[in-house]
Amino acid sequence: MNKIRGNFIPKYPIEPLAKANKLSPNSNIVLVMLILITSKAIQGCEPFKIKRYLLDQFGISRQAVARNIRVLENNGFITVQSVRGKAPLLTLLDSQYFEDGQKWLPKPGDRKYE
Image (cartoon, rainbow, N blue to C red; front, top):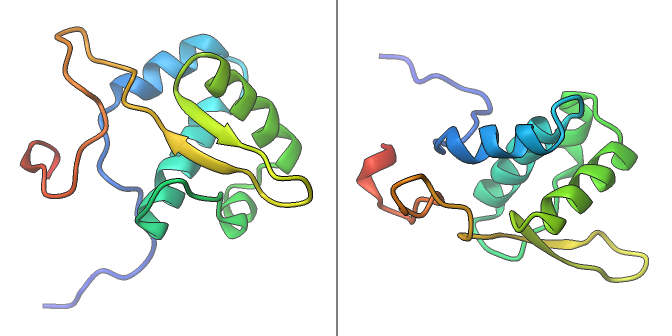
């Protein structure tokens, strides 16, 4: 059997993306969330930096990402550690919950999202 090659978006629940979209429905906020989730998965740690090549792949500008990161930070989805002249360090927060109170960020080895 041949392995499928290429880049994939990690398995994450849809609820936080839907919540983020309601914050700014006419922006690229969901796309930015997917880029953040993918960047975190690639680096495997927090805090993490946004992978520049993902911005290029999705055709989204740094300015659009910066605007959406501010919205996400102001609404408790992420924290941002700014360093002058460098890419910000980002952390995805577990503060966004499902209706039943379950945390939305799966932990390594969490079978619920496999």
